[in-house]
Image (cartoon, rainbow, N blue to C red; front, side):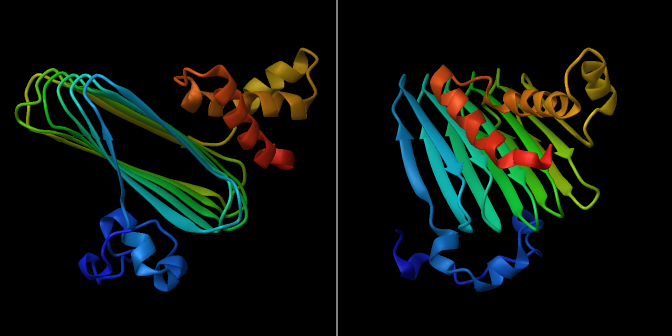
Amino acid sequence: MADVATLPTVRPSNRDEDWRYSDSAYLAAADLAAIHHWRRLEVPAGETRDEIFTFLDDTSGTERLRVNVGAGGTFTCFAAITGGRYRRLELEITLSEGAHFEFGGVTVGGGEMVQEFVTRVIHAEPDGTSNQVVRAVQGGTSTGNFLGRIEVVRDAQKTDAAQNFRALLLEKGASANTKPELEIFADDVKCAHGAAIGALDDSAAFYMAARGLPPEVARRLLVQAFIGDAFAAMADDEAREVMLGHVLEKLGDAV
């Protein structure tokens, strides 16, 4: 934990751009030290580090991780948020020459839950790559958020960065928010972002049901495929199945 004397004394609120969709009641009551604490991780040059986050219980809170990835190194992070009145995972990644960052995140919410991923990826040197895939499945009056910022400094030529957010709203009261940002000062780069928010594709479910699948099974398979995109890059098949299992268990009868 950082020295309390060095922590910011200003409490974040929905007026702050990076917290605009957050749960205001949580921010008003939360411990400042918990909100502002950053865990730090160094990935040595040429090495790979992996992180998996599973926020499954009813505890609210924030997790903030700041990572420096050395030249030619790789940092992969996969996360599932399925519990808690308010849950936030914030990542700040700085990439050296030829480094790679891979992120896959899923939120599954019901009731009045607010769940969010906030990322800042800094391409600080040439030839870095990053890819982010976030999927949100929201029911009740829950909210799923993704705020993703990509920064490419002037000398970070040959950067290749992408982020993609899609949200599936299971009920009329559910919502999703996304705020992609690109700040690019180099001129030889590939940077892309995409976002889509909508309801389950009833025509696809009908097509599957017409071929003998019960409607509830068809819907569940469609949601599973939708979520699976976020974990497709996981190298460990067993870990991927465990992550999918956690998410599908939370979905329960919602689909």
